[in-house]
Length: 291
Image (cartoon, rainbow, N blue to C red; front, side):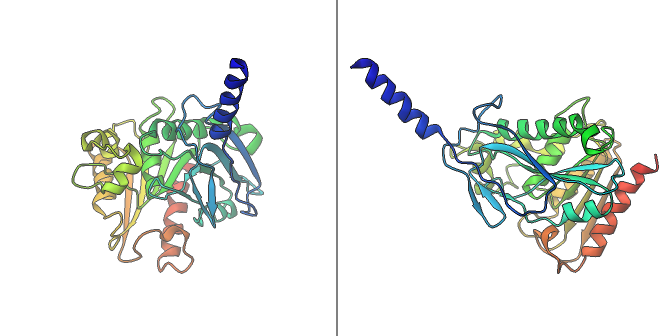
């Protein structure tokens, strides 16, 4: 009788722990691969809810999955892109992958595990693993492992800057950040943003440990930053702080602040300065080809 009770309890726990993962169909990728989930990754984000997909937004993520866009004639460069979503979702609404693909650049969009209110170690581990996987796949995907860039928008921009400063000796060759939420200081982080990362029992001093301008060293990769002056969700103080930290440490950097556009414009075809940001991105990438 006791064995039966234990077996039933084990089965019930397994059912509660099981998670349904979602894949974004017809997104246009040439390949996709699941790297790990909470049962196989080094650390878990302790998410027990099933993943949910609403249009292009993933919620309650519990696995690391890569969506790969392969150009017909790859030039060797690749960009590992982390979508934003305030660390409450992973939003695949960016225009970047197809734009870069047309210009010979392999792009990898990362569906990463969200912090789930305090489990942010899983999030940065996913970012590190994504970068390493792209380098491991370099030969198969026509990539030069020495020409791997990272990029991200909003919270994804924070994650890309965090990753840039978290892999000593394995840094990406460069970074491209769209309106990045780099600053995590007591006066800057909203309560919602802090709780997404740290949980309900938030201590702002702990949130400040994820303030990426403070992480910058002379080894931080060169970085292009793009933002809008009228962004009220991530005010320009955030990208400016990261830019100033880069320059203070002698790191090559370029900052473009457009007069208008608000937040989230990297996925908008009607953004007034779309040709400008795309030209800036290609110009930035071309400077590395010239080396």
